[in-house]
Length: 196
Image (cartoon, rainbow, N blue to C red; front, side, top):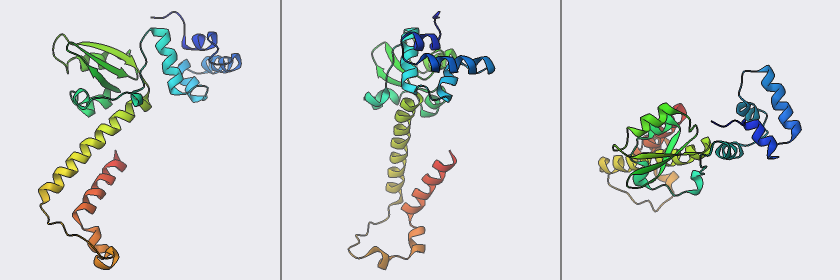
């Protein structure tokens, strides 16, 4: 572990001002919260700046998953629920290694659980990232899964497609539209999204 704290690193490298560092110290003396939580709550730094600082302090590479093309085959190796639970995303795979971006790279339980998802001997290379970065990839993945499920459901329905060349308001009443298969699917998706 590093002998320098996040606050010391940020202050020494002039990433935050002395005044902001003092605010964090005062709040830290009054609260059991970590320096990192206080820095976030006070809005002194954004998530990316904090993650990059931790990357430097602990020697763990930083990755912004919004700037990386994550192959479908790599992310599909671990189910989305596990990735959400462990706040992580595999983003590169080689013959004997996998690179995994994690919000908390020190979460040993998550690392061990993810290790079990890969063949024996696969080395896990941990990267640090932000919640926004992980959510970006996982939201896309969930959207892709949902889209394929909806497509499959529509193919299974086997309803003849009717081409509409007239004003839709004149053809269908709102009650008919409400009960249409696609409308029911969209409503189910929206309800799922609202309750999740």
